[in-house]
Structures are given as structure tokens and as C-alpha cells.
Image 1 (cartoon, rainbow over the protein chains, first blue to last red):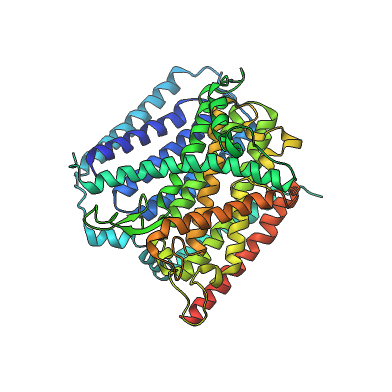
Image 2 (cartoon, each protein chain N blue to C red):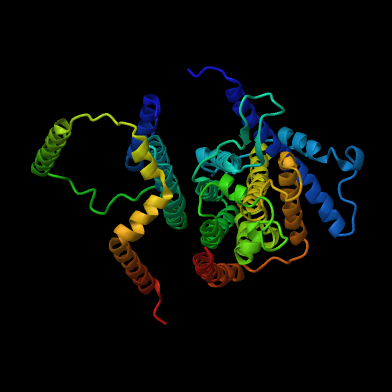
Length: 171
Length: 344
């Protein structure tokens, strides 16, 4: 992948992700999140894994975000509501506490990132073929990690049943 | 910068040709849709503009260009204009992975044969699926951004319909993938050349997986919002559905997207089930012609159905999608997989 393509997709992804939390229209947030997912898919293509990229678009950008969009559309909230209690004046002590926490978090992030060495991505044709091959992904998923796969599907099934029970009106 | 080679020039001109051909196909389709509708209703159809009314699409385009571009005051400005662009872009992009001819050197013009396909990907089938699933956003956004009740209802209906049929669509697709053992559209098409060894039938997947073909075709009609599943635009209930508030070229883009989507879905159906650009017993180098013929037949079928079947009721459509088509497609997938295991 050409470096400028990486920077392009990374920049779009960052911009969109910041936009998701940075502005107050939920509709725009959903769309920016889709933009972020698509640029991530672009990065996956650059890492020689087109299958993951396409799955990313089908599952996240295509299926899950449509549901998000549905909910936002049906609620029809043009602007995010201000959280209840947001107008309560915050004392100086609380602000200072928050600032210290934020500073600690920032230091931790910087420290963790500085410990990471920059490892250049080496295009390994064999590894790329392994990741790109749908057959190998399938074998890995259904043979080596079959247990985790099945357990995950049961988890999702339970969640689905739960959602149905919660949404069902008592007759 | 890459150096300019004959194959690069070819690639770029191929993109141009495909883009142009899709636009022309939309215009031709509009003409034939109106003509066939006319015949189906025992009237003449367009016959005033040019010989046999052949210039009618051109006149329509000119009319659309010169119309005023209107936007409701309460509409969301950005999304209102983004929606038709998104719709048209996704419609065109999906055609990029569909092969429409065998590799050719253009009578010795190029050194090595190049395939007639914009992009040959090893996950082509999934790419089509991904891009068509993105096409929903154009319609949903149009419905929401117009800030009008008809548009919103149309957009909601359309997206509910598309996500319920996408599952059956994907399951039918999976049955073909089980038979073909590959995700590349070109390889799937190549497997369907010639005849079966045992029976004198073309080696098309439609004979191996007729149920999958049926499900795929029905779900394809629902995906493209065509009659008898044309709820998003049910005139009697919703005026024009999600594009009620659009005029001029932004309306034209939706129109274009709808027809290009039809061509794409028919192209995918032909590639997956009807042997793509192969016609057994006939020369392969005429591939694009066979491809065009098969796609045209399916498109004719679409228009034919529109005037044969009455529109479903909305709850019937949901019922049909979730409770009949989806279970049928799952059973079909299991049976197909069992058959492949048994015979291979």
C-alpha cells in the first residue's frame, strides 16, 4: 500500500471518529461512523486482507449501522438532548479532580505509545495469501476455533431471545 | 507515477465504456419499460419523439436537466443532496466486478489477453453484496433528509424491505458458493462453460440449484424495489415515496440508480446462475453479446412481471420475506451442501 493511501484513510477515519462524538446531530454521528468504518475497510485492503475489508463493510457499515439509522430516524431527534442534571454547577474541586484524572490518563497513553517501537509492515506474500484466503479463514474458524465460534453464536442467540422478551408486550 | 502502457490505457477506457454503457442502458430501459407497458395495456406507448418514439429518453433527459432544482425549506441541506449521489454511486460501483466477456487481445492490439471486467477480485461476490447493502443509505437518507411524511415512510419501508430480503439473498448466494467453491465471479462463470457431462444441458448453476435461483431472483426484485414489491414508491399510498421531494437532476439520479441497480442485479444473476457470457456450442469471443442477451431477457422479465402481478400488501411482503423465503433458503443451503458432499 502506498504510504499516502494509508495516511489518507487514517486521516478520514480519525476525522470521522472525532466527528461522531464532536457534533450533536445523531443522524450525522451515524453517518460519520459509517464513514469511519469504510475508511477502516480501506486500511484492511492495504494490509492485504480484502476478505476482512468486505466483511467489515457488509457487517458493520451495511447491516449494523442500518439498524442504528433506523432507531435514530424513528426517534427523530434533531439534536442530542442535554443530559439531565447537566445544568448543576460543578464545583472547583470536582473540576480539579477531573483534570488530574485526565492528565494521568494522557500521561499513561503517551508512555504506552512511546514504549511501542515502530515496526514497518513487511509485505509477506505467503502470510498475505493465508489471511486473504477465505478457505483458510473458514478452516481456522470452524476447525481450530470451533468452540469459541459456537459459544459466541449461543451468546448472540441468548441476547436475541432477551431482546424479544423485553420488546414483547404483555398480552 | 506509473508509466503509460497499453494495458493501463485499456483499463481506463474500459471503465469509461462500462460507465457510459450503464448510463445508456438506463435510457434504453426507460424506453422499453414505457413501450412494453404500453403493449401490456393495449396502447401505443411513446411514439411522437423521433421514429417509433426512440428519442423519448433523450427528450426526458433534456426535460429533467432544464427543470428547477427544488429543496424543501425544512430539509437537511447536506444530506438532501448527498442521498441521490450515494444512490447513483453505489449502483454504478457494483458493476465493476461483473465479468461480461472472455479475455481478449482485441484482435492482436494488446500483447496479452485482458479480461473484460473492470476489476477481477477474489472476493467479487462479497463485494457486490457489500456495495448493494450500502445502496440502502441513499434511500434512507433521502427519506429522512426530505423532512416530509411520505418520503420518510417510503424510506423506512424501503430499508425494512431491503434488510429483510438481503438475508434470503445472501443464503441463496451461499448455496451457489457451496457448489462453485470460490468467491470469484470470473471463476464461477468459467465453471459454467460448455455442457454437463451426463445430460445435454448447458452447465449452468440454475440447473444445479433451481431453488436458489428462484429465491435469488425474487429477493433481487425486492432489492431493486420493483413491482410487485415496489412499496417504497407505492403511488396510491405514498405519492412517490422516498423521492417525493426531489426534482430535476437529483430526481434523475435516483431514477438512474434504480435502473442501473436492475442491470447490476440481472448481471449478477446471469453470472451466478445462467453461465455469464458463455453460450454452449456458440463462439466464446462473442461473449459480451451473449451476456447482453441474457441480461436483456431478465430485464424484460422484470417489466413483464410488473404488469402481470398486483402489488403485495406491506405486511404480506414482510411475512413472505421472513417466514417463507428465509427458511426456504436455509433449507436449500443445507440440501445443496449435503448434495455437494455426497457427489463430490
